Image 1 (tube, rainbow, N blue to C red):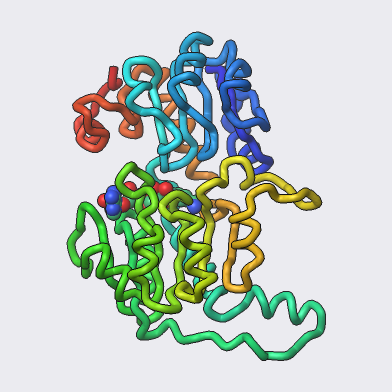
Image 2: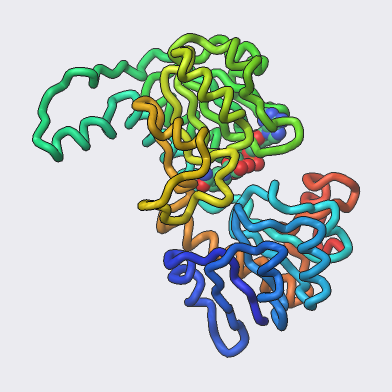
Length: 340
Ligand code: NAI
């Protein structure tokens, strides 16, 4: 099995190179998968890609023409893949769960950092500034947190919040047992803290926009570790400028694809909205780092390689994504062999 590995970073190579042997060859490319770089997969049976690689119709056609039979996403979200177009052309796999704890704990880390001004204190004490002025936080205990999306990560985040003594309300299109659900508008109106943990779909794009920012409680903290486009970044910025939004913790950003994961220090950032957000004292940005724990990287590599191994051994794979039945979820549940 020959694999083209796109958008590879040192930590990816470390996690995946132990799978290389006589039968498995992996070519690591630093570049992302784009229409211009798809050619690099020539001679490969499969491509391994990440969140900001593009797998649109043109690229699917190109990969098929090159003889690539499978694309394995080394992540959970698949909004960057045209799953429908891929059907009957190229098999797509993902890693549905690798460590919900990694992402939920990162959301909690950002929340605590923001509320207790740890990012400010860290900078101050490094310069021997021991003043506390401007560092007043607030207790999380007793506050209302609104969790949008109560799947694997949302549920872990809910438990963490309960540990802090917070009141949890939630919204999910497909509610689960034992969670206190409210409508999305109610959640926006009642929450002191809102954390997004639902996938990016046509329905969830810009869930938080100019109109819904209008519903928010004054001083609310917004956390997004899911996908950037759940939030209209310009509306968020306006909400912060007008003091409606008290703070934002962003691990993802709508236009992150050409920026995140790269070192642009010493360069001028072209994205004015992101630059302005980063300049705010009450905004914390991490560059899609929530997944990055040793445990998650190891699980990602194991599942990704397991997905490809099953595929090339002609076995069914529960992590294949397809449009058979027109419904990804029901297809996954019933699948015992290849989707097409
Ligand atoms: P999951 O599939 O277990 O849970 C997603 C939940 O969202 C489900 O309960 C589902 O019913 C709900 N949902 C679907 N459509 C919805 C809608 N229209 N409105 C409200 N809720 C809706 O997924 P998981 O593992 O919890 O991951 C959540 C998201 O986190 C992923 O979609 C991915 O985008 C993001 N993620 C981010 C990472 C990072 O490093 N920042 C790493 C891993 C995932």
